[in-house]
Image (cartoon, rainbow, N blue to C red; front, side):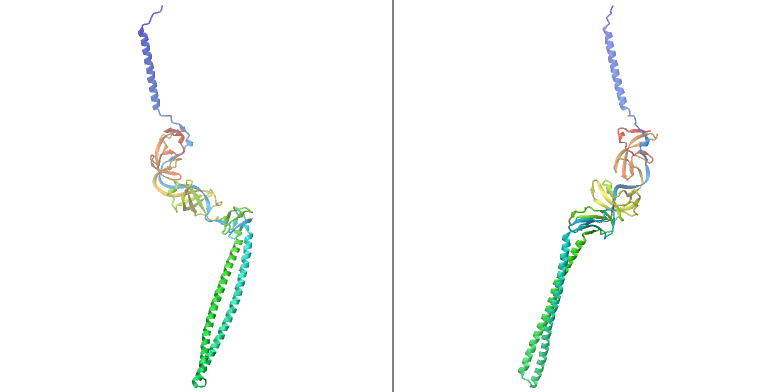
Length: 418
């Protein structure tokens, strides 16, 4: 038969269950705390994919680098001097030209007609000038003859008056006759002075009349030269020796004064125009040493100009080339230029990481003594160059650090190299 258990058995059993449950909860809590304090397992990285570099002490050359192109030092755009229509393109881009090479020909009937009219006007003015010369010469001769006749009459009357005066003193002629001779002499003397003044005035007037007509001839001659120049400029010439680069017009196109018809550049003298990031351009000054890589050779040079404006986050820097241009060097060729800013002596430096600005603090993985484990380390960097950076704190000479991009391991403080 069934025997009833005492109530103490059930109570003890319940207490035992509570104790076991509390113990299990405490164990789970302890395990959770222990697991939370464990460091995450260090991920493994292939050694061949990590770019390791050693911290060194010594001189460091600060440089900045920028991409750019070769451009001619002398570029000439040839504008249209007058209205016209493109009749013929004589030479095309890529052709060597001399100053007298005709690049294209324009046509303008109005200019040809204006030239013909200018020639006719000049011929008419020159004929009028010659006719005026003859007229003036005849008038002067007539005036000179009249003046000379009066002068001769005056001299004769003067001699007659002197003779009559002498005879009157001797009583051979009357005093009235002597006075009449003197009056006639005085009258002719006055007329002689007047005629001489008239001759002088006419001569001066003739020179003025000739000068006016000569000025008109000179004006028309200059106008004719202008018309001839305009007609001549319908044959568009290069103006300088070099290479024809562009002819931005087509046959049959109507162009106006000032329209660019061609571009000619002297390819014997090129310079490099580099685009330097605005954050790196602050230390560039004119005269600094530079080198330009044309992909076919290195050319030394120096900074000759710095653009004062910033465009699209870059500053344009001109580098004057000092060496002989390699084969294949031509305008618009892409180049890579390096500018030397300064030389720093006896400093700690290391290769430039894939990220990190000048005068900032970055984190790098430093290789531990076991040669396998890498620990994240805060590194303060100073001045930067193209391939190296100055180490101000966080590393010492001989340390090895990973410079490649390790952003995928930002959640880990340690990694292992395999």
